[in-house]
Image (cartoon, rainbow, N blue to C red):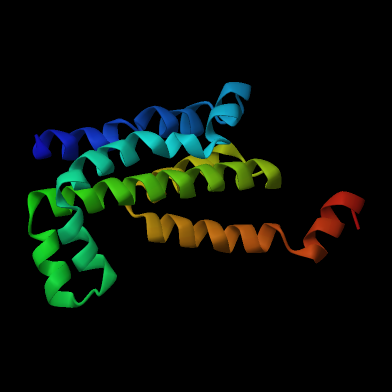
Length: 149
């Protein structure tokens, strides 16, 4: 059962990623990814995985140390739970990036690869997006773009 939950976690988020990458300007995409409820599917998997292990989870997370975390991650349910949590957070980050990209007017051919990079290696995709966002959202650039000066 744990193996199945691990496998299904990512696939539960694929429709949302697909909308952001392949239909970024659709009103449906914007409506769906504007809701934090898109993270519910992987969080349901997380809940199922940890429900029977709350004491171990609490012990690991309430006073973490490397050895305890290593033991936690060595269990199938622990690794799968962390995976579900990561997938949920990545999706929320991707949805925020999508909304910010739309606000800034970033082209879908730029945002698509950034979102794919975020799916695969989220810290790199997110970091690169933050750098692009900082450049595009500079006050002096906004004045130049709006007024043509």
